[in-house]
Structure formats: C-alpha cells, structure tokens
Image (cartoon, rainbow, N blue to C red):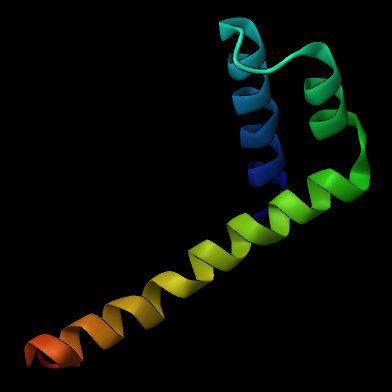
Length: 66
C-alpha cells in the first residue's frame, strides 16, 4: 500500500506545485526528503486504518448491528 500512497503523494505535490499553491522548495521537500515523505505516508496510513474503528463507534452509537 505504501507504493500507492507514495505515487499519490507525488501526484498531489505536482498538482499543488502546478497550481501555484506550493513552491519548488516545498515540492522538493515533500518528494525528495524520505523523512518527510515517510511521515506523510504514516499519517495517511493512520487515517485509512482509523476508518473501521470510526465506523464501528458510529454504528454502535446509532444502534446499528456491528
């Protein structure tokens, strides 16, 4: 999964750079620095992993079968 996250990270960084939202420095920091890219990957993986737990808590609160 980390390969897909890294590809998406490059695509988003390129889109933000092309749109003018970020500069060359930030783009190169996101795409070239392995520590920054790893931290962003870990955050995205954490968000993806939190989806089942969040759904379970919401379903339990609403009285749906879990």
